[in-house]
Length: 168
Image (cartoon, rainbow, N blue to C red; front, top):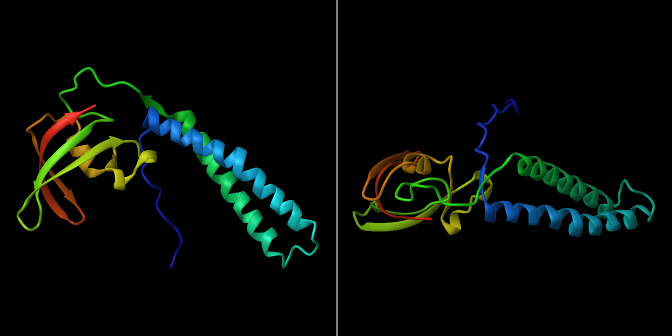
């Protein structure tokens, strides 16, 4: 069995102002708060002597690598983002950063409504209803208007949605 994974399709570079701010806060937290604490802990562990069996040293170094990797990734992403900080000229259509209320029939035949916000891949948060602009649902919604119907095919099946409301 091979470890090869085909390269993933690049995600879009769009982000909301709130998302950019959250990622900048994460970089600050990692670099200015967590990293100095972990560095101090590794330094103290190294001073104790034998590093080969020193768990504090080993796990501290691992955590430093994780922090550095995440900061490097976020820094590169922050350089390339296109920040969307205002609504589009035509607010009657679905575009990036829109809140969209959808109606659909669930598997039991009952009418159900859901509200989603279309955001960048780095802001994804299903618990808040934030879906990626690269997701099948968001791609189907882009450019549509209120009362338009869209059919979305996902791995779990096909669903018909009706757009009830669009907000920015």
